[in-house]
Length: 453
Image (cartoon, rainbow, N blue to C red):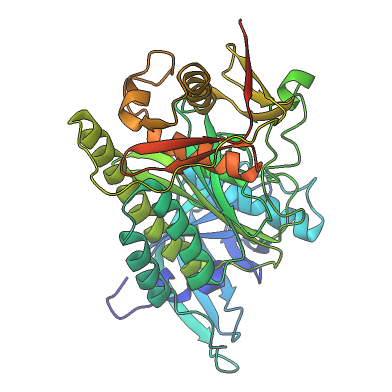
């Protein structure tokens, strides 16, 4: 490819799938064949991937003669481009395959071909040349947010966060304000490395704090498992993360399930992993009822933002843990004390299950796991000794709280617990009482009951 030639970066809008591409191949004996191709996937400026779905003439031609040509159309102004490429290999797993599989599911649902379009592999091609063969019919539409400017403003906002709670708030606020995204959520990886839990969200009426999804489930789970962004611009049942989660759960599991927030009929979805130093920390997820809502520029900008958020999250968590290890103190004045428990208030019945750390208030499920163990310890200390002040350091060292030895991410669990209690408008809440300190506020007498394994 010459230096002054077009490359795929210049025509990336043509690869969104809004207008199907046309693919020309040639058999070993020179017989040509032309067909529509379901999916043309941008990989980088010199590589693209095509969906391999059928063992047909096109497939046989590619294996016999790896030189192909594609005709793609710009969806905004109608310019046409011819792409000359050579087949390299077929990938049947990995990030590229999963991205294409998810997008193809959306295309299939959109065109009524869900039972027909099944990805067998992602055929990777190297691009030799891109030529414009038809000029634009009219000027491309302009307007909308400048993604680079929006990213700059987002970066400035999240950089000002001084703790994990503020980072979560600033990230979601920035995405909503600067990118015009109405529905978003932030999920973090649990200690077992097999599930993500929701920390906060925007646009759903409830935060869904504590709602979980397994790695590999839906758009969010696939993005996390493969550590790659997944973007779908058509509604699809196959990647509907919330609707199928309840299937197969027994009654005991169901009563401990917090519903995931989410749109009932999403038209577009984009899940971006939070990765720092090769370690998955979580996922930033946005969605819209509108189809074709998120383009390449949105994906690029949110991937860049996610990288900054992940790096800052790791730094804040490490800094907080280091400060606690050094027994750093905060000399800032304490916020006002919580109100006293009113006389004659009905006791709050609290049950804790050793099996999974789950906690119930008056038969209503609240939280489980490490966050549940933290809440149970605080409530126990309060009931025995009247304590209301706790430090992150003592919680991290408490033997009854099952934190992993490496990467415990206690701060994230405290953010989750605080938001979950607020969501439920529970008679128990947590407040910040300075750096590395929490205050437990209890509005009713406690009647604690532990259920052993």
